[in-house]
Length: 401
Image 1 (cartoon, helix red, strand yellow):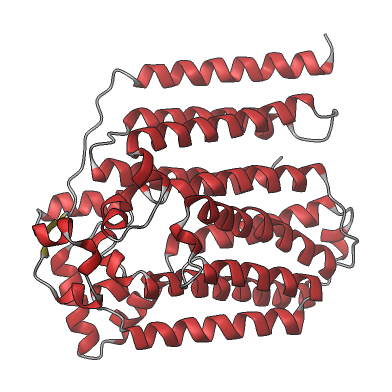
Image 2 (cartoon, one colour):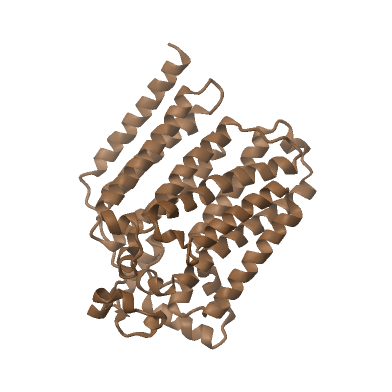
């Protein structure tokens, strides 16, 4: 039996076992957790165009109270659900000068789930570049490299804060409907403070990259900085067009981040940059994955987007079809990863993580999709969170393939 045949047989066996395990879940009913919903007056539904920035002070919608046990369950599972009483207390604590409450609001302002993705991409890209360079780990000048790595991470996190922060400023009224837990929408952070954080992040981040890294990385950083800004800032505001929004997110989080980190590490150790099969794979895979995230991120926001005439695939096509399409695209992306491992020259990838690992994640994707109830907002939010979990898991595989 040839090497390719053995790989095909192995991957087929793994896939069959995973798919069988997925089918075993199909008969199991999934418990749905309670969450907070916003009740809105007919004014909000029938006259969205007349709403102004004072919407957060209106009594047109009020948080519906839920039991503490339900809140705890939901908080542990879904980013974005919140306890109205805890939120009200946080606002009160901030007004009274609590440093802890202000720092918590700042942390929420940076959108932690995006920070985790940035940190994982940085760590995985660094490990991959070092492993791909013979002798790099043994001969590296760690005294110089580690501080530079930390500086680079800080620059990336500042860029992340700039992009998600400016989005919250310009989307405040929409977030009052869709994401009332965010600090600008909830009142935990004033627009003045938010602009201060965005201004600091948007200026210091580029200065760091310009000072410590090659000019190519500075240009790539500023490209991502610009794309992230015009995503939210009028009059361009690419988020209003689903195709432009998808391309923006896919470019920044899929290609620029992964290529930039790898290139920066290669430059730091004095090794020439070469497109390796692993880097080419992760750039393709994560660009496709980020495109799916760009579409599914709108699933929990469908009501607010409709109210403010924000055109997304979710508002045009509906949650069930988008969820099915996103799952299919991600599943095909995993098939692409498996076939890449099967068909590549022997020794290019490690078969177990490349073939078996991606087969396992594909099976997990199908399991999560089977648990989705498109009529339940808590279920939709959990489905979106699980997509981010798979996104994080891919960076673990990236260090192993």
